[in-house]
Image (cartoon, rainbow, N blue to C red):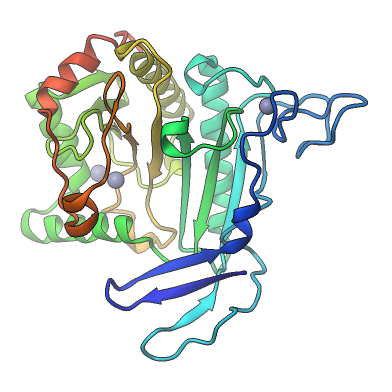
Length: 326
Ligand SMILES: [Zn+2]
Ligand SMILES: [Zn+2]
Ligand SMILES: [Zn+2]
């Protein structure tokens, strides 16, 4: 069962994906469906003895190229539509016990190339409006398979958070001219207090109005809309800064640091490309080494986040953990 149901109160889609209930949940250590298939061993998702980076369609996709007919019929008030789209898994390495932070810059660079390739290919489909690579890392964010991997979703519409960012960027252009993302990155550099790391092509900072204590954005210094706009030099520079930031996260509390990482790029529609400024957002769920930030009444019920730390303070702590010269 999988279908898009319209949430009339909020003006957004929810996807039902009941088959996901059967997902593999912490399999025994000798069976990982994302490890290569060992000779004579269990068949895994990857029928090879080893692999480099590999991406393939999620076995439990919520959005699909050929979705089933919706299980219920909608109406004008509460429309329903088939869950067109795609959900892919990207395996970073055949090694089971490493994290993205521990992989060499060259592998992170190859990952960015995979994101580019999938953006180009999925974005070329007529039913796709938006492509978003992301990674959930750590049990704290509900990861059921610890093998280092990320995902790429292709949506048949522009998802709400991206639509909101785009609306803000359009309003900014109308009022002040120019790109909002370009203005923000310039302002953060000028101010400096929230900068966590930087190189010639990218800046990492805790945003002025961070919603998570250690929320960090990695933003292109020069305007780029899509991952596919990046030149090889910019792509390599991104890989270097990501590696430095991820190691910094791990150093912060001296533990493997959980996070949600999302790539915010432009929608497929070229009309959005002047306003959508490429960046990567990290939402770490930790407030301190052992304390989680939960989405409670105000966050979940009203959409107003309460950050009980100052972005200037958390940025300073994080900056001290991030190597310069990335
Ligand atoms: Zn594995
Ligand atoms: Zn820009
Ligand atoms: Zn964003």
